[in-house]
Each structure stands twice: as structure tokens, then as C-alpha cells.
Length: 213
Ligand SMILES: C[S@@+](CC[C@H](N)C(=O)[O-])C[C@H]1O[C@@H](n2cnc3c(N)ncnc32)[C@H](O)[C@@H]1O
Image 1 (tube, protein in one colour):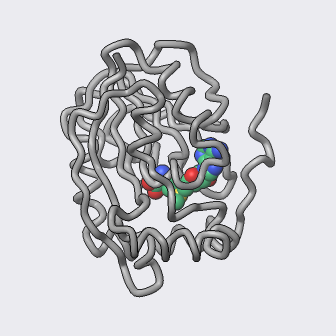
Image 2 (tube, protein in one colour):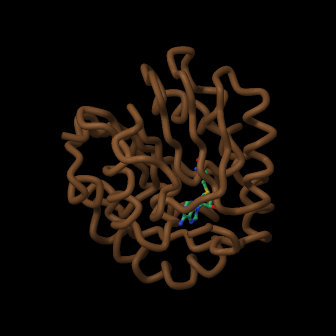
Image 3 (cartoon, protein in one colour):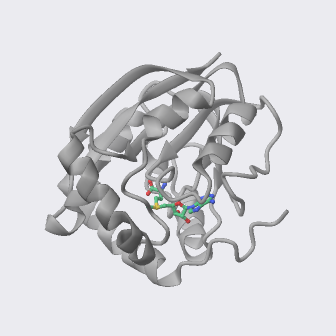
């Protein structure tokens, strides 16, 4: 099924481009670079946005298939792909119905997207399907806080947050979701990162890699 029109957030897309520029200026670029360190072979990136990860793919990457359903962000990704250091092909599609063959990628990449997909379980099942046995999932995501007081605040605010943030949720336990999908987390770094008071509730973040058995 085509992803056409299924993710349509023109206001959020414009806002995200500005917001992400501020986050990159505050040091988010270092997290993206770390997430992709040592990656090689065929890569699938889901919900690639406007291509902020593309400059950080190492030369050992032979191809990136970048799937992005939102048309404004996809246009940005196409421009970023033209300047990328490795071949990047940008296509329309949904993380939960990946237009890709089973076990055909060495690495899957998810950054700041497992918060936004409608069905995180389906998206992770799809990543598990398309990554080859022994392949890796690299992730950089904002997640549910590990302290109960902060987590309670996230749960309280999430219904409002998601309406203004293009379907993004601030209270997902994405590490648990990655493991439930059949990946083994080999490295995970948890930290706080935000650009201002406005995104403090999304400051609990994690970065790491997981292996598909
Ligand atoms: C906060 S942005 C992050 C974009 C990019 N991954 C990055 O690191 O800058 C969330 C992204 O998830 C995408 N998205 C939302 N629902 C999706 C879905 N079902 N499948 C794939 N991408 C989706 C949005 O279009 C958007 O590009």
C-alpha cells in the first residue's frame, strides 16, 4: 500500500526543520554522528525526515534507502541526499509497512522516529524483518523517563503534546519495544538533552545499537 497522504503534517514539518536546526547547533549532531559510527553495507533509515543523518554515514556504507512519508520533509531529504557522502535513495513509505525485501539490509537506523510512528510494535517488527540475521539496529530516540516522577509528568502531558507535535509521543518505553521485537540491545547510553524549556519533557534520550539474532 502507498504511504501517500498517511503522514501529512505540513505545519509540524516546517516547525521541525527550524527546531532541528537549533538542536543541531546545541550538539545533537554529535549524537547523530555517534549513532552511525562504524556502520557499513546496505542501510535502511526509517522516517528519515529531511535527511539530518545523511552527512554522518561513513564511507563503508554502500547504499542508504531512506524512507520518509511526509512530503515536505521528503523533499528536504532528497536535497540532502544529493550532498551526502554515500549513495542515498529517498522513497515514500511507512515504517510499519516497509517497501523493502526481507533480510536485505545490514543495518537499520531509527532516529527520533519511534516516538512518532502510529504503531511502534509494527514498525519494529518491520525493521526486524528487513534487517538480515546478525545485522544491527542503530537508534537515537527520546523516551519515557526512568524516574517515576518525570515519567508521570510525561504521561500526563502526552495527550496534548502529540496533538501539536506531528503525532510524536513523549512517553514511550522504546528500549523495551526494541527488545520485544527480537533485538538484543548491545549498547545503550541514556542521557538528558533538550534545546530549551519547551522540549524538556522530551529530554530523556537514549542512543545505542541492537543486534538482530
Ligand atoms: C521528529 S521527526 C525525525 C526525523 C528524522 N528521523 C530525524 O532524525 O531528524 C519524526 C519523523 O517521523 C516520520 N514519521 C511519522 N510517522 C511515520 C511512519 N508511520 N513511518 C515512517 N515515518 C514516520 C515523520 O514524517 C518525521 O520525518
